[in-house]
Length: 121
Image 1 (cartoon, rainbow, N blue to C red):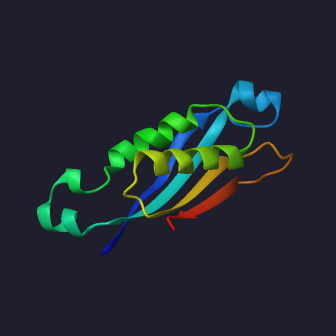
Image 2: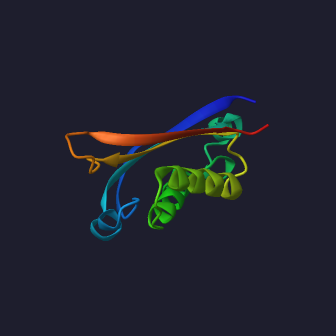
């Protein structure tokens, strides 16, 4: 297997994730960074999209999951990772970071993030 890493960086979403009621009503900006590994040998040889994982399809999957409100970033992160694993069995491992921008913590904070890693065993 020739490992190929595909990265979707700085995907931005406006969503309604948060523990506090205000966060669930007002919403916030979120950033998602994702990298995943696939066997890229066939795609490199054939130049055909069907031989790899479409990053457009991956983006749409992440967007779908970001549209579902959650109380915790850990929950959002797990849901995204599990959905990607189910829909795209060619993904052998993934690294995901979900960040809430300017979280309401009572002081200036750029972002708070939750990172998840998964490897096919």
